Image 1 (cartoon, rainbow, N blue to C red):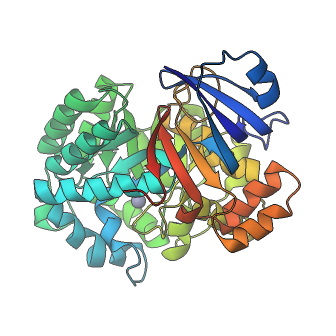
Image 2 (cartoon, rainbow, N blue to C red; image 1 turned 180 degrees about the horizontal axis):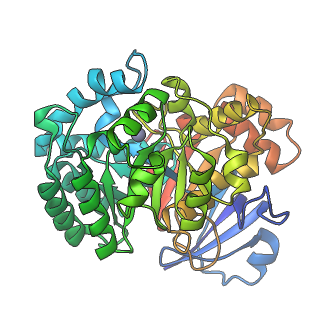
Length: 432
Ligand SMILES: [Zn+2]
């Protein structure tokens, strides 16, 4: 089945901050898709001249098509704790997160929440995500089943947590290993799904649990690894007390065999210089979570420093301590986090962090993240007339870069007209 989509198109071929040709756009472009994959992208007039007359063309007027957003770090059991008033990380976990996650032992509760969560992603133009479930195996099952049905490219894993948490959220080093392995064998590589071995963070996993997680990661080297790292100063201090033998927080993971390609560490606000080097040489990546870092007062992510070291970085919402499912709103806050550090973020760079850069971070750049031929055709149709203010602002932009900047500052779920998965419309605003 071949079809084409006509409209303004924008995507990244490389990081625009270091490659002058990294950002490619067409004011009037044509995206040709066959069997859910991109065949070609180019200027509409030229492309249509070579197109057979029977190929259906969907016209997207007053719109910009970009690759589906990729959220590099999000907690699906925390959907309902978004916007909970609190202090900082460790209290927030105790007061909101742990009580909410207890309910995910129930398969029906998990299934209902997974449905809402995935619909919310699609509504925001997010087609791929790296997701933490709760400690319960059934919570991960529910998420994978719902994502499979929608054919979304989701990587997820059961949280591993065997200490410093409520009893009803605790696994053991051995049960955590066994259940992760069962889930991995059932879901990893199933259509578009991927498994992520997911110790919550060093505070809530014993040495033994981390070592077994590392063992599993070595047994299945094409899985992802997903955890938190150096988010909050009190957390960093606690980790140094729990693991006195480790050189640093990152070293705790490294010693357990959890530092490698396709390992994704959320936050990384308080790293030491040798950590940047280890991260870079291992090929691991960082999930940059600006709304969460501001909300919990955790700190400011130093993007320039990570880029200097050529570390992979992708953007992430970190809902529920993140304050929006919208990757556009997340770009907005990323821009401000960087402004406070005399750094900047152009709209092509922001788009890169939310698409191709994120795909590289998750090890799925061959599949998604741009409109390069052969890739899976996940995309978002952004609506230039979504709100009166956005419409007014976009009317006076001169380039697609300026238009995208208006989206990243003013945009949110209202700006998403429709979302496509493998070339098929999976969400349209205003339709159930
Ligand atoms: Zn998180």
